[in-house]
Figure 1 (cartoon, helix red, strand yellow):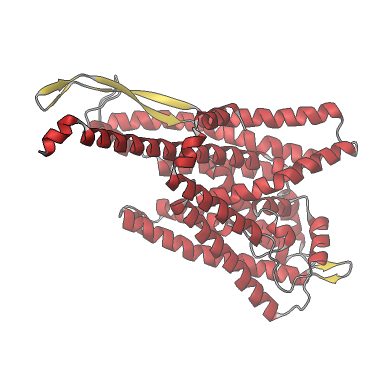
Figure 2: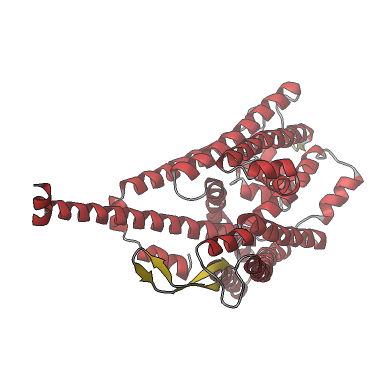
Length: 456
């Protein structure tokens, strides 16, 4: 995909991958789970006329629905059991992480270690079901109010349709949540990210074909089309570069007594990623924007009030209000998530515990302050990078009607998830090779003459 990813893949010994039984099982499990997910995106919700819904979706597309459809892997445009995809779970995770930072009771639970994380995860699942039920209700009511040229989108409207649709969609969301957790535990990579990744990748060929069709229709000339794909390639290279960029804080360890020997002083570094938050901020920002607008769009499908129409118009893609709000949310979650995943005080205490120190900085509180200062400055760069990558394609999409699959958020997800998955495969491969080397060493030691004398 890009030079760094290709280099990581080239460094792998694919023959060794074939010999790594555990790694093969994990990869096959991930592929099987993603195939099941893709099959589910084609199972329709009972009671919905697919032809009428397809007509309505084409008429109402081009805005927030297309973006939601991208994250759902096309499930929304087909109105299937995975229409909401994993987005309610992401929204619930945002709320719980905000709550863990703002609510003392939740913060105390989070500090309980593994037991606390288990409780937080359980609360997140409950909240996912609640949010999915609200969105499913709005979806069902909105479908009943939608009319196509040949009739209603729902074959038999009524309470039974609303209840059955809610059960079906909530069940689909809960199943995807469980499937993502299984991929994380028994497969390779982050399951939730891989599910979103699979949905985006599945739509990329159609997006490229649609872009070429726009060129054939005269919306682009050949030079503009080449410039567009060059821009996408440049964005991918820029994403890879920024995702691998680090600020290394030098760390020194003094000479110390180890048994009867004196260990020499050592020099190391504390790596701080420019984008510590990864792909989480754009996903969180998109999820928060999609949650209210989707409910408004479907409940208000029959005509709606002036207020909801005004909200939808100003928050449409490419509009200044949408761009400002989207960029502000990305920047906020970049700082917020970085503060959650990296604690300068804990790292400073760990350095002090093992005798390490930053040259010119006193160990302890001053080291924590210095690390926090450096982290804040590089997070500004990381947040600016995410905002640029996500907003520039959004502007092009709004101006030239490009498919949402070619947007900055989708490219960011595809590139970062690919890099993370390849890195994890590489680490599993190294671990397998290390285990094989240790087994060979033990066998050689057991078969040597000295080993035989030792057994006597």
